[in-house]
Length: 305
Image (tube, rainbow, N blue to C red; front, side, top):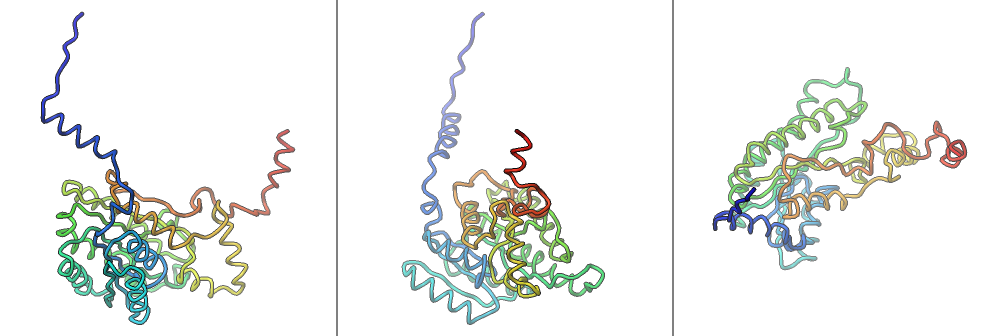
């Protein structure tokens, strides 16, 4: 039996070379240096962590929020730390469509391009039973946490297509699991996952990647606000720490690291995906550590022996 050896033509060689070049990925900071990033809800918590993270690797950042004093303070701090880049704060109410569009147009006009949109602005209402949440309250959470994300993506797409850029939506682990007393919030975070995957299918042909990061319990102002509602604040924090297999809450910097990974060339073949940054919160149910209903590991080992 004879075998015919098929030689590749020059076009095939070029395709293979380009594929092989993908494995020569530069350090993440090289991938993001001089990129232009929009972060919504960037004055505190996860958003501020993302602003700091992108500035730290050499990007230019335009971020928004409603608290001007906090926003100007973050802006001044970032520009002092990183004088060779630009950090610009804009006052934006994300429930107002035109203000989101203006944010995107300002960024494109200021820098001539947009590489990454981080949709982060959100609202976590007081946890209450579903039968007392009004339709008006539900719609407000929907407008802030979901509709605003869509408006931002739609406005940024013409620019992201030119740069083959990316969108990172900040969701939540409760979008997968649900959460007691949080029907509206959980519903919006679940919808973010589906919207992310759907828009990823629309934009793949343009080279635009759409992904999601799902935080768990993160030590932010939002978490502290929730904690302050509890009669036993220390007990609540201690209990919350047992819900992660790693035995602690996360930090804004840890969320920002996942966001920057997805924005970088290191994630060039990832789209329509979500990353849980939760310390293992979603694995199994209930407390993971110091669980009084489970035998001590030492006792279990004795039984096994």
